Length: 127
Image (cartoon, rainbow, N blue to C red; front, side):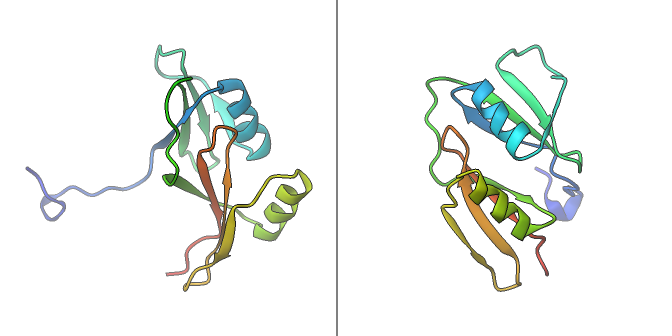
């Protein structure tokens, strides 16, 4: 088995996956609210919708109407203007579950998508 010391070097996050119960509703959240771009699927699976951030990192929405949604697992997405994001979420009536500032000065907040998946929006880390 290879170890990190022997040559495995992770270089980038390629994609994250969210289980969703209603793909169209989730697409409106991730595309229309959070601004991700829908891109063509690279697989024949009709239950997967592909989205992409400006950085190239992808988000795959996998529709499974019966799947349980994890309570605490989440992905974090960096934002350019944290205060503008907070104002926009408040104006749209999106509930901010928790927010704060970490020891390195990184500001963060947590919201939930329409299926209850936890989503973190944050400023860049400062370490």
